[in-house]
Amino acid sequence: QVQLAESGGGSVQSGGSLSLSCVASGRTFTNYAMAWFRQGPGKEREFVATISRGGGNTYYADSVKGRFTISRDNAKNTVYLQMNKLKPEDTAVYYCAGRSSMRTSLTQGNYDYWGQGTQVTVSS
Image 1 (cartoon, helix red, strand yellow):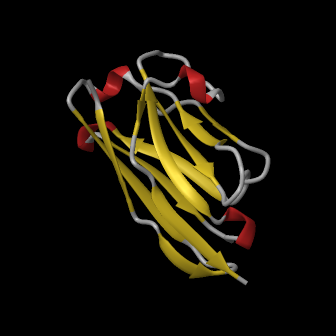
Image 2 (cartoon, one colour):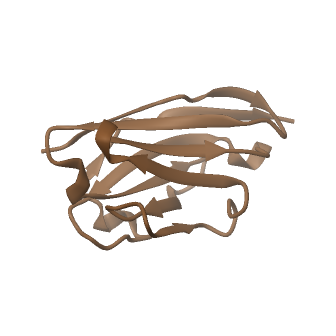
């Protein structure tokens, strides 16, 4: 089992920045590709970004490309999501997810472990 715990959410004005963290415990972190998903009010949960086990490969949803950056520190068992130029439509609960694979995935059904989520609210 892997336990994931997100932190760093909060409220910010449009154009601002936030940094999310997700700490993993329980198994070898480097065995897991990691991702961030989000679920806005009244919306389905959607893919945001993913990163490979070694951190060399990343992929982003078109809606966040150029504004968000996913990274990981395997020594700290932590994956990050730096969010810049935030927009009101970025308002959502953000979830960290992990899958025991060397491959990243955009599909939430391919992820085995999930955090509880952290709220991000962007006001106009």
